[in-house]
Length: 116
Length: 111
Image (cartoon, rainbow over all chains, first blue to last red; front, side):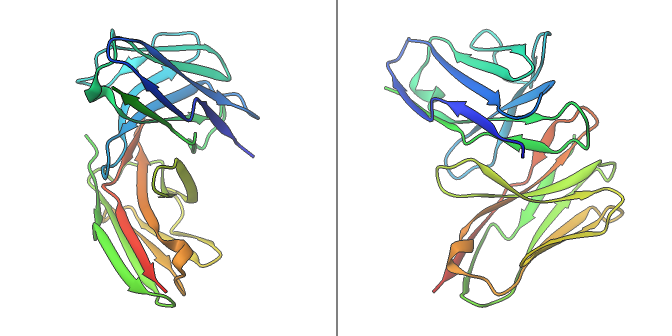
């Protein structure tokens, strides 16, 4: 199998605080992980691509200083939302690809972030 | 930039009916195409992956076809059941292994 987990599954935080979301590949090595956000009734929008041991590549319009991504190992990537604001409230989903092809992505269950 | 569109945006059918969901993409230079389902408030479940060299894939009551030259894929669901109610997303990777997701089709199967 190819299982990806996320922690926490949901989090509520106050405006101005920071929140860290973890994405783990449980039974495979993932050189590349992706972070998406999804607003209600909308599709997934890619935020950034994370490669193990190197800096993440952010999509246009995504603030890299606000959404800090760290991919420290082949099984773990973290997304930290810094100085969160209510407009950051969203569903955040990560995915991972195995080190070998065929570029099939395996998705985590998502993290619901609510900023009050 | 790849653009992925899904039609219809929403679909409601009575139980037992066969149905087709459509996905179109603008750049035919794809590695593969993947269909997912997403239940409300949940993550994505992979349904089918079609490699660029394949024309279709089947899994149970699901059949997905791919026509790269015309930039289209269809997901056929046979004998629909209420448990099939969900949002269905298609996605294609670019050369950088980034996925572009379609707009999604929200399916409701009425018992």
